[in-house]
Image (cartoon, rainbow, N blue to C red; front, side):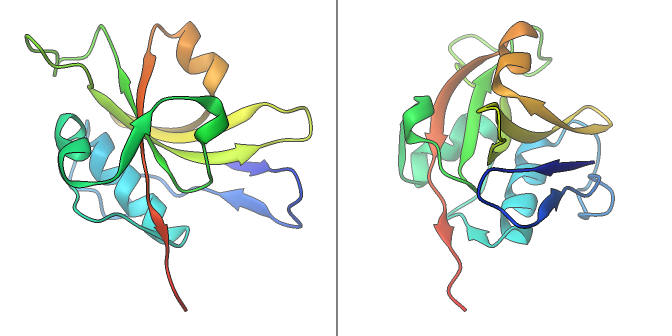
Length: 139
């Protein structure tokens, strides 16, 4: 899966969850962390989607606050991880915008890895909740 982003001279290609070494299906938070790392970004402390905000800098979701490599937590009403009081059940990595201004994220859903637009995520019934900030790795 490839995507060409604005002001980029290269395409971003995302690996499958298996190629990233994710331990199994339905491990979106592990996939997001490993992909962000592969793209050159660090997360303070990783964990399950619903705990990421407890140990990492975050802001409420706003498209204006997104930067490449940030994680986006979402609420998926059909997730098997929904429990009373849990407001976040899915994690994805923000990749950037294309020439038309569409915003893209990379995600693992079940046994599938995909690139989606933020519009597609919302059409699928998911609601973005928070942006978990990552830091660019120093060389």
